[in-house]
Image (cartoon, rainbow, N blue to C red; front, top):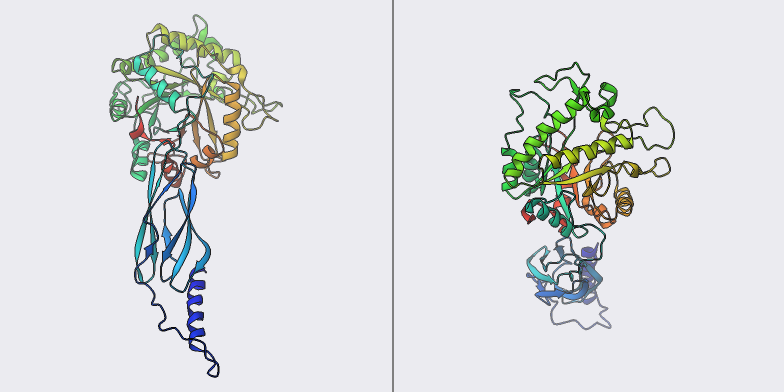
Length: 475
């Protein structure tokens, strides 16, 4: 429409000059200005404040030009002010710079029949605030942690509220498949890769999984990545079940096993033998990583409360993992037993993360699961797993969790599609802008080379200057 108005103005002017009355002729100019064949600008560069500002410029062009510009610079035609010499008044509006780095951009002006012109826009960095007063602890719960473990925690602490760390879940267990797929899609790797000990119970010599082969993890770490570990802690269907080399005979679901969580802490029970035997297997691998100086984010016993905090009675109002099925007290005892056993075995390279269920997004129907919190002496960071949540729901959860656990950083432990893929998860840019400033975010895997978010989700995330990718990790 703008281009049409400009052309129409020039056409009307030509018509006026050529169709005056003969008995009272209008003055006829010596010549009608020719349309320029090159676009020219009144300025070649602009320097904007960090707060953002607008500038008036003049563009000489045969038509109102199209402008190609980066997302943080908005260019609009101001009042369509045009004169007979093809001068177009335009406004260049520079958005606020929320980053702590100077920004530069090049605007390209194009119009049919004319060569293009460029305008360089430079913008000052936002003033970096002093570290705010915060109650978040700088001390890890692990006594005498590895220097690298403390350094990783300090890195997360220093980024908290300013940046969010990108993460991805490995395809089932012990690989970097999804991270490689994200890199192929975006040209960048997530900062964190999370590995699962889900098949640690499988007998040796199975031919398909060997957790003592550290190469996937050490390769990731050596490339600059952060290592995260979790554990879908499987138990036998019953005391007489022998797990198969194909992974059969076990479960995490309380309704599919006779394994009782409370018995795992009682002498002489088959549950305790399994509980400590499996921890020994995991500890062996973690200590191998520790010997190589590799720290890790450690998120065991996730989503313990499940639906158990529902206010009304319902058949499904239970925990969905065995470690939470017998209630908050048993769960906390399991957590503390694991913590103390890892300490006894000399594990010093872990940052301990507990996963809250909060209100399940609905405080009117659910109680908060604060009774399930193991205690400040056993938890470094609090996480939350959300699927299919929009930006406002993310912001609500983040705010409530941070208020409930003011001495802990809060992370998005898992995320992805909801309702079996029918409900999208909020883009990182949208939830961040509403205040959901998670320490990190981690989409779950959805097959060998994809995660439970759209390709466009990753592209949006990695365009944000507050998102930390693997190349920006430094500790």
